[in-house]
Image (cartoon, rainbow, N blue to C red; front, side, top):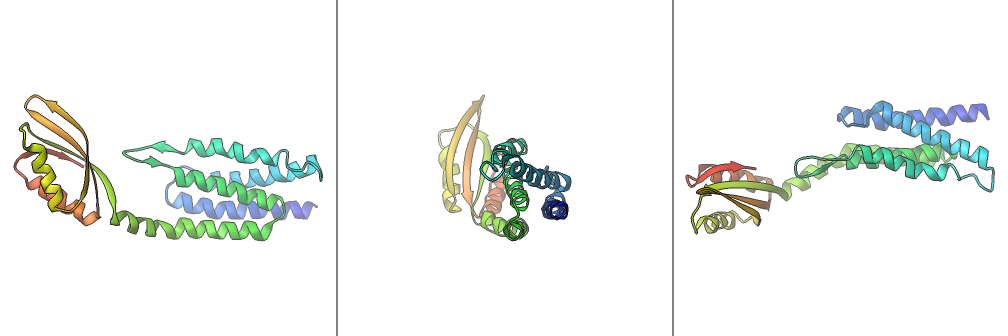
Length: 209
């Protein structure tokens, strides 16, 4: 039994460490040591649960690991500029805990397969995400012009000429100036071209995007 415990703890540390190294390399909030501790802790809780609960009630402690991990995952999620960050890291924490539980329960092959798939997802899919993101980026544009009745129509005409999807979010009038807040969806290159045209437009006083 002692040798079996050592093997389970070693595997939990190994797979948690590999995933944690990838997170550490990308400078994420939950990195190398955190992932090892999560995997090892989930593994140990599962073992203890089986020992204390016996054959009939062996999941009474382990069943609370999922909800407990939820609190840790929630701590790495935060709202940044126009987006929510940390969701992938939170999901990684959740899966690492599942791997630790699998190892603790003795399902080494399933835990290893899950770990390998998780590493492949974390390492390869970001490149696919960036490619998809370039196809259709959503950005907010703040465009300040002098107030006149044609301002909004002139800006909309520019959007239509560049074949972008646009939505007016809000309008703020300050003195003789108007600040239009737009949400624009378009390919990365269309955003770049649109930004250049707006910056070269003499009627536009300020531009933020």
